[in-house]
Length: 314
Image 1: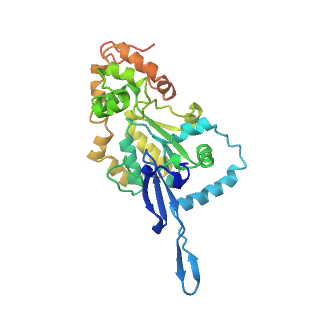
Image 2: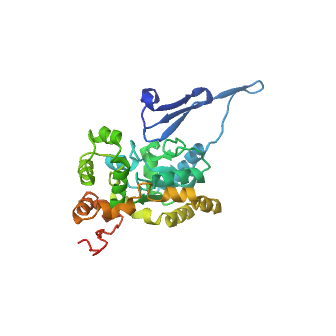
């Protein structure tokens, strides 16, 4: 996973509490792992006794071992090193894993990620004001390759991905980041002169906010639940119902004004500004080209944002 703890980048060590039996190691994307240190207590009658408490992680490991016996008798496909790297997405946007609900959730920047992280905190009873820097969620990058392969091909695990129409998503990215001078200079050494200039810049540099939403081998999407920003609340209920997490408390939380506002297309109001920035076919064609896989795999319609003629993209 992250390599030897003692050789781990000290910048990423979040907490080191060996006296309490835990060393928490964090990655730059907010993922973390816990190394447990054996604690002992001395009972005058029994001598040294190991204190054993089954945590959620240990129970999960037990269930994995049990499931492995079943999986050994099946043909579990082998993922290549490249495929494994794509699936884990170690450094940024590693898929969220909810072990209690057997869910692997593939998320994307500028596609409701704040909403989903808040949702997953809520249904697990986790509290953290800044969901993006929280180390309370588990990520696929924390698991070894064997575990990832087994989870990905085990039908008892739900795999889901949430996406957004590429033109809306990239415009939202531009309105949010394109005018942030420090951010742009860090990535591109300069700020863009226009939206078209921004698109030309992001074609040259990788970044989680504008990378394609198709990140893993296409065949793995065939057995996934696919949710879209345009239907976020319906998909939420469908997904949580499937994994057994839907209840009235979630319904009330989801329909609160605060959460509804969070699930809208950001404060940038990108959807309301589509015509302003996509007022010709040239820029739209550029998006269709740059994010061809997103349109193909997630079945987004290639129709021009021409509110007068409503031309069909050919």
